[in-house]
Image: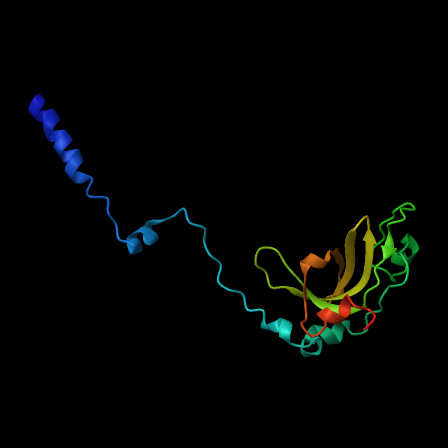
Length: 161
């Protein structure tokens, strides 16, 4: 019986191997590391809006600016959204150059959408922007959800220029 126990102990000891893998083998076998996404090509931001076919579907967008949108403005199609702030003094129209064109960042690594920003308001420090897509749909976003054309970014948030 002792010989049998010694045999299994020796078998287990020698079958485990040295446990030393090369760095290449460790990388190949490592399933716990996060997958690194390949670099994304953002060269489209160096182009001008006029270089995109969507521009011609959106270049007639009318900006809604100078006042906070009402439900009536939205119902008539002049504004994209109404925040119904009930007299909150922090609610105001954002003084930026609109309309302007940008790319709306999409979830799940989908390509960004070309949009025309046509409304911008601030409420309690949060900026909300209304946009129109080339397919005619409207939506809202915040500035962090947009990628700006390099040729326009400095002009958008500096209306005095």
